[in-house]
Length: 487
Image (cartoon, rainbow, N blue to C red; front, side, top):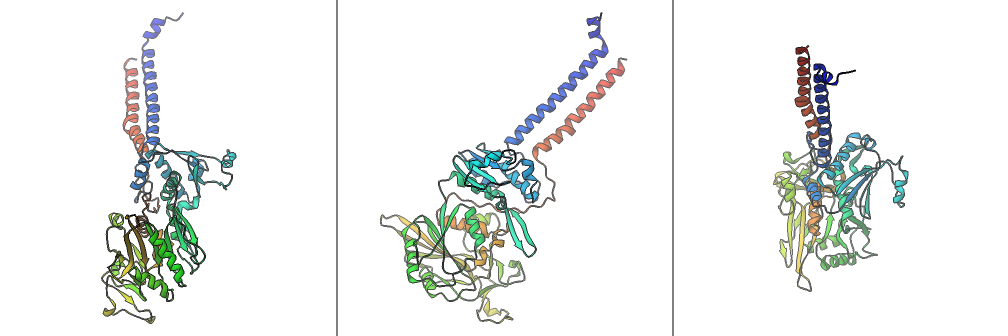
């Protein structure tokens, strides 16, 4: 028979029990710590982004949007998380996945669900009118949804060597989709058709991305819909008739917060009717080509592609705060016919430097500017605002915005995160048309040359190497010392 009392009083049993208790306690502490850290990481924005341009962080605009969110949104990703983050280009899919996880950390109303279409093929039957594919993203709130295709997460450029991803626009695309599914509707814009190529496909895609509903209108055969607040006349090579211009007058006179955006280019012929119309609004598009002699503003050997100045701070305030400058390329010079006349007044928004000038339209290929050609402060973007009272006595405003450079809205310029053009023009058009539910998020260029670690990983490594490992060594030392001492 085993004597229980003597067995329990045995030194080996006593110290062995202490070892077991200590081991179990350490294991329980590690498990508990892991549970707490996992909860904190999944619920709160604890990531520390060590990349140079903070590609894994979201902007303050998005943070503010998420903090004010009061509707539930589900982001369905058509893949497993491992499958999505291993898609090519992998670094951009990893960044997009991290952005979506950030959304859930900044708002309890946002949830992510990964849907493996191979294991759950019936999921796509919920959207019978859609073609759901691998890595598509469905942003849904209630009955409203928006499908994001993987290609729209990136800014893709085409070159003679093929297509390549220049930057990420994941945050911008996803935030816009969330805004779309919780808002009452889109803002309507129309492009005037029938007068030549637009050459602004990248800009139209940017408008779509920012919840504009686009359509075309032929002023000869149709009328402008009542809900349209923005009309775009880009690079016309055929003049508008008096009847078409009359419809533009009616559009601008009829309602508040309406705008016509006119874009000129060097390839246009003379357009006398359009010139008269713009002149009535106080803006003249002159002939010639604007050049810049201040080398600090040139981004290439060409004197016709230069950084411009903001001529006012009402519409450019956000860009000035972000220290972003606009780029103007191959611009025709603009001129104010008047500063103010009756109920219209003209404002210069963008201009070239005091060392800029105008190259004559009939100059030779070997033309070199002289001092007399440098006139300085050449306007490249001008705004005419009409402010008057309607029949009820309410003050209403409408605008004509004229840009001398259609290349200011070229796709490569709009996609450059270091140039203000995309954000500036979106801010400007949003302000002119009375939009309040807009904000622009800059693209992000990704390069994984820096160390990336998140806060939970840092805590785990700190606890392991500064607490658990020393504690384990100390515990083992005490146990060995006690055993040897009582042998």
